[in-house]
Image (cartoon, rainbow over the protein chains, first blue to last red):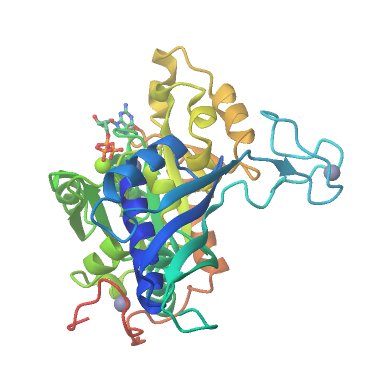
Length: 114
Length: 254
Ligand SMILES: Nc1nc2c(ncn2[C@@H]2O[C@H](COP(=O)(O)OP(=O)(O)OP(=O)(O)O)[C@@H](O)[C@H]2O)c(=O)[nH]1
Ligand SMILES: [Mg+2]
Ligand SMILES: [Zn+2]
Ligand SMILES: [Zn+2]
Ligand SMILES: [Zn+2]
């Protein structure tokens, strides 16, 4: 359950940013999780709800966007069918993972500043 | 502060970051990678299910690589014991246990801390045996040159399809315990087919730690990686390194 250590890293990062900008409070954060990020979005949310009490994120709503994984041919751009071998049948080259498929990204924080 | 009248109202500002949540780990991993490269060490992160045969493969590697004259080293992650490190020592691989306690994976900081306790600079190939787990270790960069997954023939042909993140991260899969195939209802071709659906470059070697099958190909693979990284023929252990300020996990003595 590395979701807990991820939330620790996440809250640590938000704390540092809030301190740097002398924020009075954090109202929300947006994160993006790709299907191949190796993270269970629901577990991540549960871990966040458990850990945010008593931290700078106490009142910060977590906005979580998920994204399905996709592979394409790097040569002809044809999408690889889900579940198929990761090789373009036409060009005979290894597929490329579409950006965002394995994203695990903190996009934005809403800070209340003086 | 409200700029019109200075009344002290607060403002809500969206701060765009677009940063990896694991950016901190990735920074420490880059630092580890510098350590390994400057010292001429090939670092391999060995992952796989509990009991897949990771330690057994390393024990067999010590035997199979004996003629290469490589100096080997290892750290072995273990939730509670140091059994694997003891086994590796006995096989002739200087090793330390990294006791992870509750953690289900190694991270770059744990590895960096362990390095400071080991003569890893004097090694040619350094193995990091990760926690037996097909999920969590995959997303933590440790500073390795290559991720290798040990998948035993006893685990079921569809394991790669169930754990695509782990196999996507792998450069090589060692299909282990090949000596058991005659006793099992398993089709190695089906495992290979599953690998091709989760790895764009499905490199694999069928091995048995018991009989030594395939280990020559595995040792040759390691040798090729050393060549590709330009590690061959360098004198290891001479380069010093500077810790960037705030590098996590550093000790003053390092
Ligand atoms: N028949 C056979 N058994 C093997 C082979 N390799 C490992 N085993 C057995 O599989 C079991 C687990 O092997 P380990 O090497 O401890 O596996 P591991 O992946 O290091 O296990 P953890 O570190 O606990 O996750 C042991 O009982 C080994 O004897 C093999 O090539 N053939
Ligand atoms: Mg082991
Ligand atoms: Zn985990
Ligand atoms: Zn194509
Ligand atoms: Zn260091």
